[in-house]
Length: 493
Image (cartoon, rainbow, N blue to C red; front, side, top):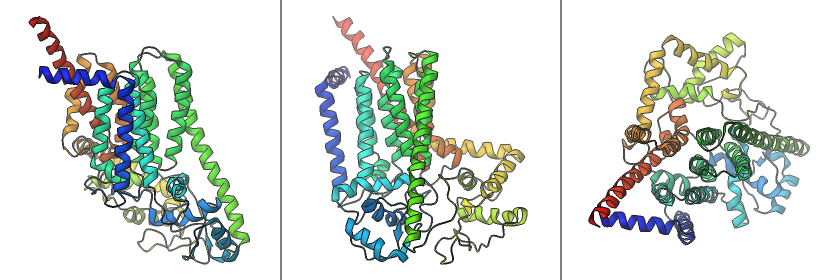
């Protein structure tokens, strides 16, 4: 043990040097480049995968990539399937087949989060074509940038060893290998965003010397990053809570600067989201005019800015409910809400048990009406959830407790490691290791989806706290044996 502690100490000293930093960063890039290249020949197995939602929905999204890449128009697609993949071909398609132009395909563009289309661009720019579009390169780039920034953040506070352990663990976890390198989806983006934010801001927990100019820049940039990626998938917004925790839990920032940083971060976050939504709203208006002039199919139906909240909460209660008829199934919610919308709100909706209504916005019947976008739909499902919780609070508390148990148990391939959170928290508090305790708190918001909305079908894999619990536990064990080793060496001398 004495020799092992010595070797680890020597390695830690090496990592703290710039040469050690460069080597780890280069190895990370090389390893993940290998992952990316190999995934084109053989996919990583879906040992851990999120199957609770469609997410990016590449089977629909690809329709909009063609015109966006070549002409910048969005949301624009075509009923024609024989396309020439070039800018000239796209412009010719608009000029000669205007009647085939559409602005919605099933329900991909109307439900918001339109920045998703940008995920296709890295691969398209690399190939010079949008033929066979893929978001794997986007996923790989964001994940690697997150890992690099995270490790650099730990190196900057002179704690590269736990940073390296986190890097290795996350770079070898089946969930990230599959979701980043094999799955055409964006379920790894929340972790990538969190790692970027952590790397940029971890110094506020560990460094007494604070450069407020750099910190303000970091707060602005972090808010922009979270706002930007949350317009790919709205649940990524929860990372802003982690950022605020970083500032609030810092023992080295005074109260007034903390308030200023929090305001700056929230403003940057909201401003970015607003800017992106305005950008795509303007594109929508321009595309509407183009399609109208081309005698195509203009979409005049409802739009929402992002995923609704109460619909998934309604369906999510089906993970443990056996009393009030909830189920992780959109149709279950529609069957409940639509009769009430017809009876109490006089909406006259026609519905026959599908994922959309039997009503359309257009005479060509290309654009069906989706229940989530109907006026008062969210109110109806919300009222049902709130009413059941008020009527039977113990039922709801039981579900939340079961979700917490599942989140603690099923996050990484080794079950039940999440329960180390409690003895570790006790140890850290008892020994006044406030910075490490704070770091665990910062990682907890990523478990929000599995506790507030739904804990089944792989949603618990979003959680990152177990990685931090495991690494900090190993670090505390190392520090304990390192002290013993120093004492032993002193006695021997």
